[in-house]
Image (cartoon, rainbow over all chains, first blue to last red):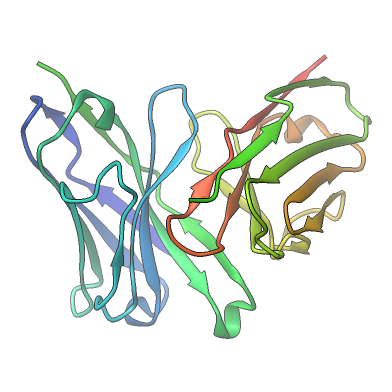
Length: 123
Length: 107
């Protein structure tokens, strides 16, 4: 069974930093692209970042580019998101997501989601 | 960047109703579209990918269609457990994007 367990959320002041982690199990982590998706309280879903299976390729929307860094450790089956220069608008529940793409996936989609870790940016 | 516009944003329906949700892309995305269902306090759940392929384990009352810029999610006979918020998402290159969501509520 695929399990994605996020941690690292909390309350941080504007301009501060936070590092989120996601412990993955139940699948071959090193063969899977991974992503972060966030959801502000009462709002919709927003894609935050994607990293390739090797970690060589990373992608971000303009809203977080230059402030957030996604990374992975394929030996520890861990995904991370380093968030710097945090703003009030970054307040959200952050989901760790398994990205199924190509090959045996027969398509592109987010097929497994963690339960999320809450980040609150406030003074 | 590709934007996705869902309509309606709120849909009131009764058990047994046929329900259709629309997702429009700002430019053509072939069939690179996915639908999710999200219930309160829960993570989203994958329903369909490639516009019309049902994810394993999803009831056959859910179906999807469309290509290019216009897509639909249809629930053929709404069940009590289907009251939720539905999101579309495209995978036609980065940046990825979600639609704004459609909340299906009890009429």
